[in-house]
Image 1 (cartoon, rainbow, N blue to C red):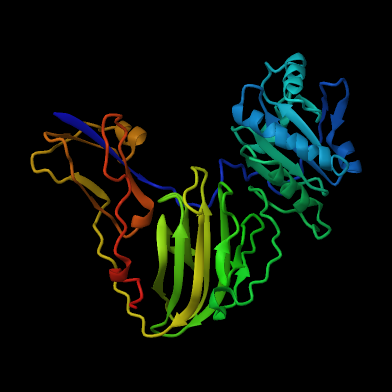
Image 2 (spheres, helix red, strand yellow; image 1 turned 90 degrees about the vertical axis):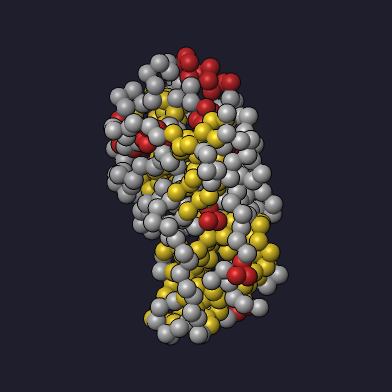
Length: 409
C-alpha cells in the first residue's frame, strides 16, 4: 500500500516583483546623520547638495541576499559616486562598528556604511524585509523603494541612469528596477498590420523586432516582463489573430496576450508556430503581447515570438468547457481519499490545495478539472514524495489544431 500526497500548484501569474513597500514612495525622505565605520559621518541633506541622487541600503550582516548584492552595488558606486551618493545602514543593533568593518573588509567594500541606530530609515521604508533600497531623488523624495536583492551591476546602473536623466523633472514612484532603454524601431513588427508601441511603465521591458517578427528583450532576466501594445477598433464579430512560437520554462515563463489590461490567454513551454485568434467586442481596445520571465530558471531558448498580428472578421469562438471547481482526483476506483478534520482551517492554511490519497497499485492516474480561471498552460502537478516518480509533471498540452482559439489551416 502506498500513500500518495498530490499537491497542485497554481502559479502566481502577477507581474514580477518581490515584497515591496509603496507607502513612502513620492514622500520626502527625513534628513538624518549617521556615523560611518571609517570614522566620518554621512548627512542626507549634505549629500544631496553635491549629488543628484542618494541610494540608502538597509541590510544586516547575517542576511544572505544582502551579501549577494553588495559586490554589484560597490561596482556601480565606483562608477557613479561623483553623482550618486550611497550609504549602507545595518538595521541590526548587534552589527557594531567593529562587526561592520570586518564585514566590509571581507567583501572589499569601500562605500559608506553605518548603523540605522534609531530605526528611523527602516520605519520610513515601512518594510519588514531586507535588503531594502531607497533611492532619494534630486528633489529629496523617495522615487524608488524595493525590498529585493539586485542580481547584477547592470540593475544598479539602470536605476541610477533613470534618476540621473536630464528628462527627470518630477518625482517618480518605482518599486522595480527600470528596464533598459532599448532604441529599436517597431515598424513592420509582426507583419505590419498593427502599429505597436512600448508600454508606458519604465520598469517594463519591451518586445523587439528580429527577422521581421516580435521577440522579447528580457530573455534571461529574472522577475521581469516585456510588453508591447497596440490600439485597435473592432467591429461586431472581429477577433485578434496572430501567429506565435514559444520555447520557455513550462508553466513558469509564458507568453501572454492582454485586452484592455486584462490577460486573456497564456502560452508556455514549447510551441511551434501556431495560429490563434481571440474574439473582441465591438469598440476600441488596447491589446498587448508580453513575455513574463520569473526567477525559477530557464529552459529552451527562453523566449517567445509573435508574427502576423491582425484583425479578422467572422470570429465565433465557443467557450472552453470548465468545471465548477478546481479538482484533482485519483481515477482508481479502489483509491481512498484521506479527509482531514480541519474545522479551524489549519491544514488549508499551511498546505493549500494538497490532497492525500491511499492507493493499492503501483500506478495512479490523476484527473484534473479546471475552472474558467485556470489556464492549463500554467498549471502543473507536483509530487513531493522522494520515492514517487511520474511520467510527466506537466499537464499534456492540448492539440492546438482542435482548440476553439486556434485558427484552422
